Length: 224
Image 1 (cartoon, one colour):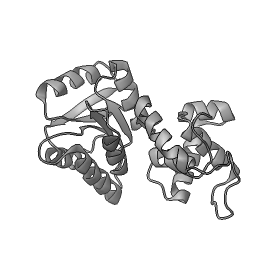
Image 2 (cartoon, rainbow, N blue to C red; image 1 turned 180 degrees about the vertical axis):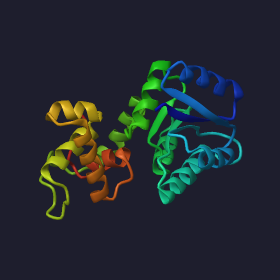
Image 3 (spheres, rainbow, N blue to C red; image 1 turned 90 degrees about the horizontal axis):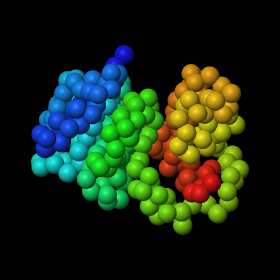
Image 4 (cartoon, rainbow, N blue to C red; image 1 turned 135 degrees about the vertical axis):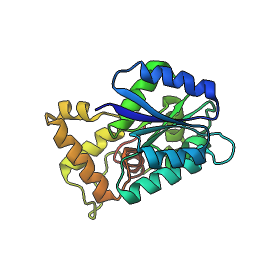
C-alpha cells in the first residue's frame, strides 16, 4: 500500500517543491495540502494520512500546537497518524517543542531529497528521525544529567525482559527494525513485536521517547 502524506506549509512554492520530491517515489502519495496549523488538524482528522510533513513556523496556529492536537486526537481514537516536522530554523527549542508535542521526527528543509524520502519511510514504519546536528546538541545537553555508570543494571522494577532491553539499546542507537533483526538473528515481525511490547510496558508513545528513556536511564550513552 502507498504511504499517504499530508503537506503542511504556509508557502505554496515550498509545498509544490515537496510534492514533486515525494511524488517522485512510486510508493508515496500526497493526499492533501494545508497552509496553516488549524487547516492541518482538520485535514489530518479527515484524511488520516500515514505521515504529516509539518512546518513549524506558520501564522496562526503553529506546527508545534498542530502536532500536539493531531497526535493527541489520533491516539484517543486509535488512528496511526505520525508527524515529521520540517523547518528552516536549526533551533533546539523547535526540536524539543515539536518532539514533546508528539512528532516522530525533526528535519531541516535543506535536507537532500533522498534524505527527505528516507525520513518519510522511517517515520511511516514507526521509526524516528532527528537531524544529526540537532540530535548531537541535544545529547550534549542531556549528558551532564545522565547516570555515571554505562550499561548499569536496571532497577528491580524494570518491567522489560532481557531481550526487550537489548532491542531498546539498539533502538536508542538509531537502528531500524530490519538492522536489529539481522543483528539479533530474529524475524523483523518479532522485532516489531518487541518494540511494541517495550513501549507499552514503559508507557512510552513512540521510538523518540524510547531513545530519550534509554539515555536518561543510562542504558546507552552518547558516543557508544
